[in-house]
Length: 136
Image (cartoon, rainbow, N blue to C red; front, side):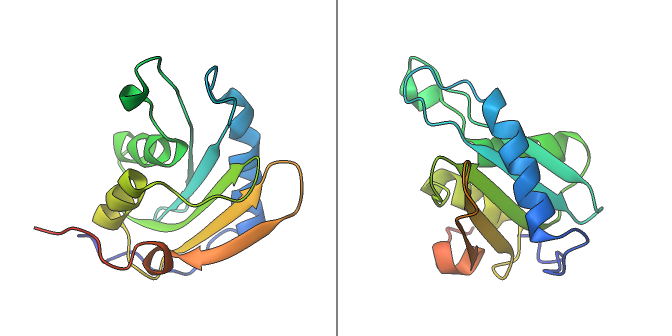
């Protein structure tokens, strides 16, 4: 697990949440109609975004959070400082996303959960949401 990440932000949580809200409308959610956007702040200071992409075979659906992580990794970034998630209401990442985040991020990393159409938000850490990740 990469524990090199610091939890200090180069950008504000509001800016990160705005980036998550901006990408959420790009989600492909014809089944659930539950669009989600994620914005991940890399150690390099860049914001990497992702949105959920559903599939008729539900197990092949990809969450916004994992899409953001994979976007960052494909861009060469593997250390992260913060994550913001925007959805119809503030919701935490699923277990699969939390496990992927735990592979790259420190347990103290802030995660901001926000609503798409209101200022409703909540700030937690990865450890708050996932206190005991699987490790090898």
